[in-house]
Length: 74
Image (cartoon, rainbow, N blue to C red; front, side, top):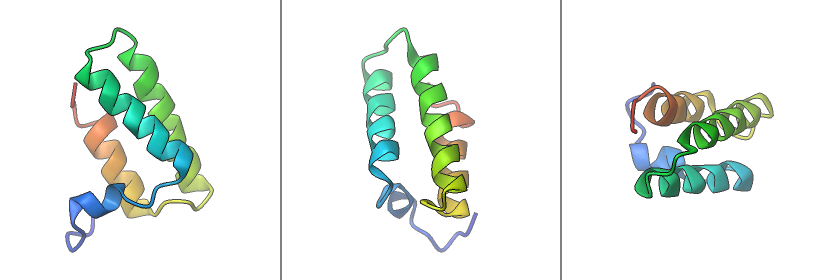
């Protein structure tokens, strides 16, 4: 990942559907919901779709996957 990016910037300007899934995931983590696996799967699918469609950069894709999917945030 390109180190010149500030991490907060990589979560800005996301497509609306990806932004909504990220918000739902963050709320699910905060509220310790039982269906967190569903939220993770939905968010991962949205990341993949956004990248394939060219709506996010490879740097954003890698950052989001590493932080939320592979990063063990839950």
